[in-house]
Each structure stands twice: as C-alpha cells, then as structure tokens.
Image (cartoon, rainbow, N blue to C red):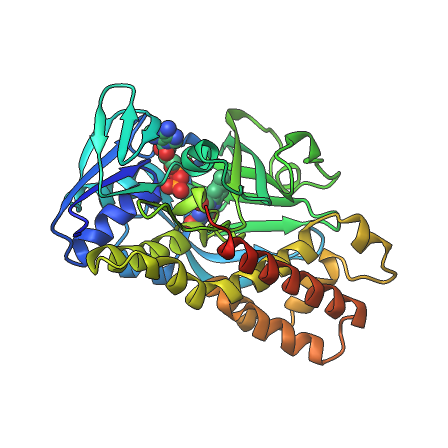
Length: 387
Ligand SMILES: Cc1cc2nc3c(=O)[nH]c(=O)nc-3n(C[C@H](O)[C@H](O)[C@H](O)COP(=O)(O)OP(=O)(O)OC[C@H]3O[C@@H](n4cnc5c(N)ncnc54)[C@H](O)[C@@H]3O)c2cc1C
C-alpha cells in the first residue's frame, strides 16, 4: 500500500523539517501537520545556534552571525574560528512549513485507535503517523515504549544587553562538576543558559558555580525572561512502531548532546525518513538510521557521559580526568575541535588521537569500552523486542 496520507503530529523543527524534506525529495501524497499550539510553539527554543553546513544546505534564514566561539573553562578560554549562526526557531520552522506541501491544523493529539488519530477536534485516518511531539513523548507514553534516559536540562534567561557587549563572539564554559554555561550576546539582549547533562529532569541539580561569565561581563544584570528546557539525548527504539507509526526529533531522542547540532541531526534523520516514505519501505528507516548514526551516536554519548556526568562510579576512579583536563587538551587541537563540532562522527578520531598519546589513564578507556558495549547491547535487545 502506498503511503498517501501522512499525519505529522508536532510542528517543531522535526515536523516542519520533515514536511519540507518530503516535498524536496518528491513526495506527492497528502501531509497533515497538527500541533496543539502554533508552529514552533516550544518557547524554550526561541533561538538556536546552527553551523554553516546546515545553514547553507537548507538556506535557513538567520538573524545573527558569530565568527568565534570561546570554549573551555572560565579562567582559561580559547577561541575557535568557526562561523556560527543564530536563528529564530519560529522563523526556521515557518520557513520549512511555508516551503512544504503540508496543511497545518491546530489540534491536539489525544488518542490513537487502530489507524486513526483522535484529536480534541476531529478524527484523522492515516497510512502513517509520525510522532514529532518532542519531549511530550505522546506515542511513547501512550504505548509505554522506552523513554529517553539522558537529558540536557537547562535554565535559560534572556538578559538586557545594556552594556553593548561585543556581539561577534559567543561563549561556552564548563566547570569540573559538569555544569555548562552558554552566553550568546545580541544587539539588544543576551541569551544565557545554565545546563546540566543528567539522567533525571530535576532542575534543582543545576548548581551555579561561583564564577559565572555573565557576572564578569556585566555590571548590571537585568532579566527579561526565564525558561526551563529539556533536550532528550539518547535514542530509544523502535523507530518504527506497529507498522504505522514512526518517531522523529526529540520524541526519538536524537538531538545529539551538542549545542549547535540538534536541528541538524533532526533534519538529517528526516531525510532518511522521507526516502523511506517515498519508497514505501518503512522497515528501512531504523536500519538506515542505525547504519549511518548509531555507532557514532553511542560514541558521542560516551564522551558526554565522561565529561559531563557526575557519576559516583567515575568519581571513585583516582586521577580520572575532569572537564578541565579535557578542555586543556582540546586547546592544543583547535582544528579537531572544529571538526568535532561540525560533525560529531569525527569525535572519536579526535579523542583516539589524544588518548594514543597516553593522555588518559587506562581505566578511562575501560570505562568507555564498558559503556559502549552496554549501549550497543541494550540497543540490540530493544530491537528484538516485539512491540
Ligand atoms: C535549551 C535548548 C537549547 C538548544 N540549543 C540548540 C542549538 O543551539 N542548536 C540546535 O540545533 N539545537 C538546539 N537544541 C535542540 C533542538 O532545539 C531540539 O532538539 C529541537 O528543537 C527539537 O525539535 P522537535 O521538533 O523534536 O520538538 P519541539 O520543537 O519541542 O516540537 C514538539 C511540538 O509538538 C507539539 N505537541 C506536543 N504534544 C502534542 C500533542 N499531543 N498534540 C499535538 N501537538 C503536540 C508541541 O506543541 C511542539 O510544538 C536545543 C534545545 C534546548 C532545549
């Protein structure tokens, strides 16, 4: 049966980007895009950083450009020469929607019975439903499927730029306890974020360090808005469920754990999904995704686990390198860090080279190997389960 009637539930970057890619790749069936709110409703995503490759491939409209990113620890930053672009989430999603063939309806998904989505206003029969409901996990919750198990949790603030801070640099700082500070200055405001990579959505875990870049850079902090945000960052399978439902975006958990790479990973995955829909071969979706991304994604998660979790196990290991040691080593290899930011598949080449110089203790390699095998094994068994 051809997939002529598609429902996309959720109109963030996953839903709108998929609508766009479907048109771009030649899908001619009907696409209904539903969201309980407006397009790009997730207010925690007001601005996004994207890198050059994806900006150029999709001609995404941006409103601000940085030519350097300050990276590393607060006392000892180093600057990477890398172009980063700020986009307004709303503009990016609307751009994708307007250049698609999807019809948008403001309706909230309430239930799924057989091949019908029941919303607060209507019933929609579908050949295929794509769950793009982000961290609401609409389908996962309904069918009690495995949920993401790691998240970036963030407290975000919009501050007034009342001191004319230079706007061509953005800043990422970290401390040895896994806390991460983002500082993005614009003409009239500054977006700051306090992040933690965590296995629980518990914002009280975000403990602000004594030294904050914003306190150094600003004499007078005026808060305009505050948000809390969550980025699920561990893919959970299946990707294609009961032969009628697929997952994309945060609902799948495939925003990698890197600033500036979330939208890109989702758009790249939506290309795979679009090809499977057009070729009416949905069974290939999970296979193709795994072939292209699973291994590098797992390696990526391991590095983040290493660098950012405050794991009790890791803390017991004597001389285990903390964030500072990582960043100080990264400092010597700026071109590798840039490649790592632009393409997370690159990360392990970079770290392998570093570890081959015996910078890291053996126990770290062992820990990584254990975690790598654990995630692969879990993924394998998840795929065998009959949902
Ligand atoms: C603080 C933060 C900073 C980030 N920084 C970056 C960055 O700099 N660069 C980058 O590329 N990525 C970044 N990311 C990651 C990226 O923004 C997200 O991964 C991405 O926006 C998720 O898109 P999505 O479409 O899956 O989900 P969302 O944008 O959350 O969309 C989900 C949609 O589903 C709708 N919905 C939910 N339930 C229902 C229902 N039952 N019925 C109908 N509609 C429903 C919601 O209203 C919402 O509009 C960041 C994320 C966060 C939280």
